[in-house]
Amino acid sequence: MTLLDALKNYLRENGYRSGEKIPTEMELAAHFNVSRSRIREATTTLCLQGILDKKARRGTVIRSMDPESAGSDLLFRFSLDNVDPADYLEARKVIERAVMPLTVRRITPVMLRQLENLTEKMEDPGTSPEEADLADRDFHLLLLKACGNRTLQVFGRVLQALFREEFRRQYRLPGLVRAAAAEHRKLVTALKNSDEAEAVELIANHIRE
Image (cartoon, rainbow, N blue to C red; front, side, top):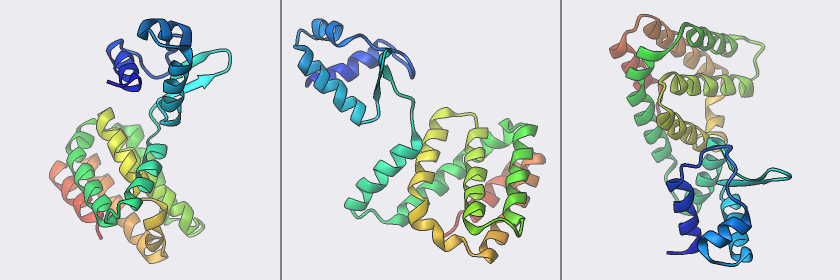
C-alpha cells in the first residue's frame, strides 16, 4: 500500500469530516514513520485532488464536496475517453426518475414555491436564454435537494455539471424554453398533489434527447 492510500485510509477510519483539521505534517510523519517531505507530498496530492485544503494559520482541513468541480473534472476525463454524451443524459434520466418518489414525499411548501419562482423566471420574456437555462438547471437541482438523500443529490449534481455548457446550447431556443417551463408547471402540480405516478412519468418524459 502506498503512503497516499494509507493516508486516505487513516482519514476515513478516524472519522474526519468536511471542515475538520487533520494532524500536522510532523504528527502524521511520526504516525506513519516517514519523513515530513513524504507526508507533504501526499497531502499536496490530496489537495490537488480536491480532498484536502491547506489554509493559512489553520493548517490542513478536509475540503467539502464540490460536485461542480467534480463534474468538470469528470467531463474532461470522459472527453479524453470518448464517452458518448448520450450516456450522461441517460444516467441523469435514471437518477432523476429514481429520486422522484422521495421528492414527492419530502418536498416542502417552501421548495414548491421556489420551483414556481424558477418556472416563472423561465416564462418571463425579459429573461435571457442563458438565464432561463440556469433557472432550468436550478429547478432540477432543487428536485434533487428535495429528495433528502445527500448521496443521490451529489451524484445528481455531478451529472448536471457533466451535462452543462457543452450540451445545453441546443435547448436555449425560446420555443424550447417555453415548452420546458410548461412541463415544469405540470410537474409542480403533481408534486403539490403528491401524485407520485404522475410525477415519475412527467420527469421521465421531460428529460429527453
